[in-house]
Image 1 (tube, one colour):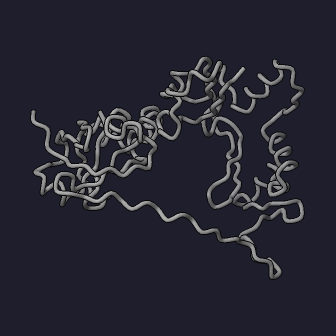
Image 2: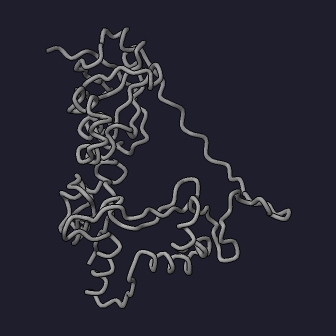
Image 3: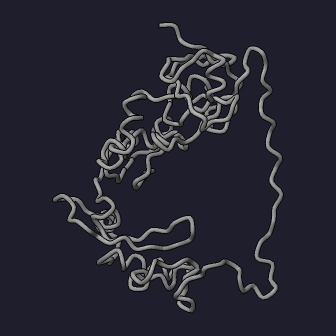
Length: 289
C-alpha cells in the first residue's frame, strides 16, 4: 500500500506540495493535527493530537538549540501525543516498539544520531537546553560549530548556479508578481482562528482582509489610484485575477506580493508554472464595482 503520513504539517496551505493534485497516487492518507486543516480534508484518517503545553516534548530551533517543553495542562479526554499514536499504530501492524514516553524516543534518537547522543530529557531540563552537537562526550552542547577544528577545513564551498534574471518590466506590465509565505495568514489562518492569543493579536487583519489580500507598495498604490482595501485586478500576459489590496511599505516598490494561501489567484496567474518561485510581469488596476 502506498501511504502518506503527515504530522502537524499542512502542505496544501503552504503550497510547497500539491497534495490535492497528487492524492490519487496514495491509497491511504493519514493526517495528525490539532485542527481541521485544508490538508486534513483530503485525508482518509485524521488523528487529533495534543497541543503545545499538553505534552512533554522536545524541539530543536534554528539556533541548533534542543529544548524541552514541559506539560502544563491536561489535554482534552481522548487526545494523545503524536508519537504515542504512531507507536500504537506500529504495534497494531506487528512492530515491537516499546516506548513508554517521549523521553525514551529521544534516547533512541541519541543512539542513531550521534549529535543528539547527550540530549537526554534529564540533560535538556537543565539550564536553557543544549545546542547540538550535544554528544555523550560533550553533554553541555556546542555553542560554536567548528571552534576546535585543529586546522581542518570545516566547510566546503560549492558555487551555485547564477539565478535567472528577473523578467523585464514593460509599459503594459510594469510590476513584478512574487509569491511567498505570509506571517499573518500562515496555514490558511487555521492556527489564528483556533488560538485566543493569536486572534487577539491579529483580529484586525482578519477583519480587514477576510478573503485574503495582495500587497502593494504605497508609492505604486498611489500611482494606480488604489487605496487599502480596494478590490484590484492583477493582469498577467495570459491571465488575470481579483483580490483585495493591502497597501504596505513591507513590500518593495515595483512588486506585487501574493501570499501562498491565495491558491486560486496563484493558480490563475501562474498556471502550469505554479512552483512558488516564478516571477511574473503584471499590471494592477482597481476593479470596477
